[in-house]
Length: 171
Image (spheres, rainbow, N blue to C red):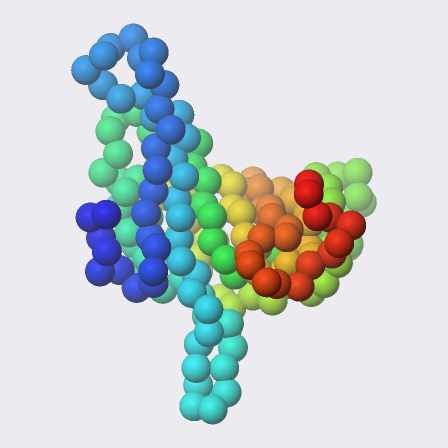
């Protein structure tokens, strides 16, 4: 990948294209999948908390959008490990609102264990034409909902040798 020197192990994107574009000289990107390493731990002396996406990773996602071809009508999706603060905000809003006015489905089975600071990741990714976020840090949460126009989704039961909910295995 062009930017292997970014913080983290994997920071890349994959374009899913329409191979039946009218003009064969251009690429018709339908979906852009961003894979962003939200890292693991942030050490503060002997103590630690969960890490966050770093500024250079977020700037990279924005520059990918800025450098895109004139056709920026693709749907962007971001996949990362540790949820953003807004996952908790969305759930709190859901609890406080008329449930029929808030979209969402699935089950909230444990707290949202987000990173050590709210560094603006949500807004930066949103400005990079990414309306859907997927994470999996909290292994038995299994829900998705819309928050301020962005789909926030959990993918349950991912990872090797992790805690999980047996009832969710296989689906």
